Length: 166
Image 1: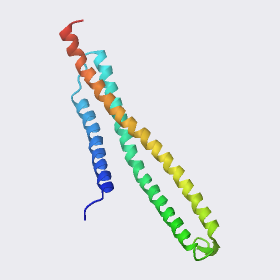
Image 2 (image 1 turned 90 degrees about the vertical axis):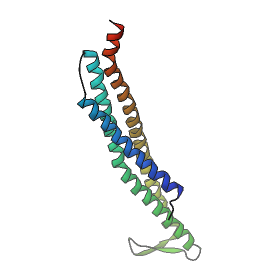
Image 3 (image 1 turned 180 degrees about the horizontal axis):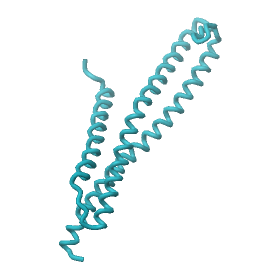
Image 4 (image 1 turned 135 degrees about the horizontal axis):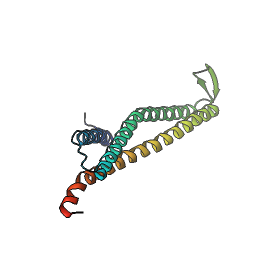
């Protein structure tokens, strides 16, 4: 069965995220393995690049770890919306619904209020998760770019000094 555009987009983004995280740690590993420290200035840039790449990789791992919790929260939100819709449909025919947790019948209005309250809490939680994930995403991208730039300066500093003199 063909995938929906949304499923294809999510899958493509996930593949890119895995690739990018692998790239970060690969660049870090290669830079550590091929490191030479000819001068103090290049050493400072090289070590700064390593730190930046390490922070970038750890931010990416942390973002992936939080993604499963985000999906669970989105699932809970969808479930609550479904329950709310079902109660609203049943409200046309009856004035009370069965509260499964207590086994008692409660007024439809109260049931809707309880679901709205739960939905509000879940949405606040999702909003917080999205903010944190966004910060981790920016840290991952910025850390990678700054790490690569610092690495280029660290590796290129001494050759440039040799070519153009002191």
